[in-house]
Image (cartoon, rainbow, N blue to C red; front, side, top):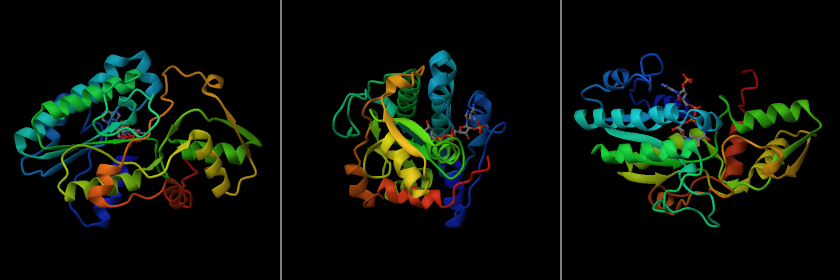
Length: 271
Ligand SMILES: NC(=O)c1ccc[n+]([C@@H]2O[C@H](COP(=O)([O-])OP(=O)(O)OC[C@H]3O[C@@H](n4cnc5c(N)ncnc54)[C@H](OP(=O)(O)O)[C@@H]3O)[C@@H](O)[C@H]2O)c1
């Protein structure tokens, strides 16, 4: 989702780029990561990751290879050629026990294997010595790809009622807004660790309700607790990322409801 959003953004701004994917860029094949970054490249955006949060519980070594070891190889290659690396991380590096937004320098205490692998990725990028921008984000969705908005839109069209968890709070993020705010941060000279999401805050139930309402669906969205849907990976009860530093540099970020309406009118219901 984020990689495709970057391609659209750079195309719209007429900024030349190369977009790489497997097999030419494979997080499990370090040589491809080294070959991907060429002398003269100024900016490398790593939007690839092991993103299967539940799957990471049963194969943490593989998630760590992709999210941490590969990130380290890529970052060291960027250091060698003098490129800046934009690398994405997650709200899941935090404990999920807070009651107010997590500042950028809050303690790292991941509660699941995916969070540990991403936290290790942050450390690998920081330790590489390359110029970098680590951008933590949360609840990403786009008109395409595997995401909550497309899942709920599909279910709301098929069913009379849906139950959605109401005990996990966070911030939805449009992948296209994330690419735009990432580029804005880079152009404004940001480096180190930053947060970028859409603004506002909600539960998954609130989010699903807004999706159904904005689509004009007659499906009844009902609240339940996480106990109703046990998952292999523990999920944070609260994972809102503080945006003060980011909004101070690049201005206010759009509210999640506004972002949602911009995506819903273009949602790809086919794939
Ligand atoms: N989605 C979220 O809610 C969320 C939340 C917080 C942070 N993030 C972070 O945001 C970044 C972008 O994620 P996204 O939301 O755009 O997820 P996504 O849509 O799942 O995209 C992940 C991409 O990584 C690629 N990938 C996976 N394993 C790979 C490998 N071994 N080698 C090369 N490419 C590989 C996938 O390629 P294939 O198509 O070939 O599988 C896919 O294009 C990631 O760093 C993620 O951890 C995402």
